[in-house]
Image 1 (spheres, rainbow, N blue to C red):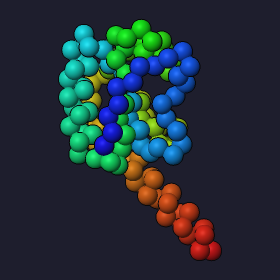
Image 2: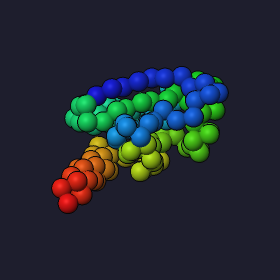
Image 3: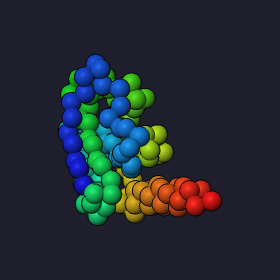
Length: 125
């Protein structure tokens, strides 16, 4: 499990590459009470998945992070974007329970396993 707390710059386009899967990006603010609750829930979920996911949190209280969030189309916090293979798979706006987040991550991880199995079958054929 990797948790990063980056500061975006004007050059920051996406903290996600195609090789990283899945990536959970959290947009929150230090003054936002629902964000704090969601962060606690996400920390719990991320701990459960260990190295199978990457977690990055952007504090929108930081001006450059706020600009980055706007470029990502974030209009409300807390918002969580989940990427798989470098592509946004889910966008969760507002508070979600740990079970709901796990369900989304499990679906993505299951798709990754299915994609690997399919590619292995194609190689064998």
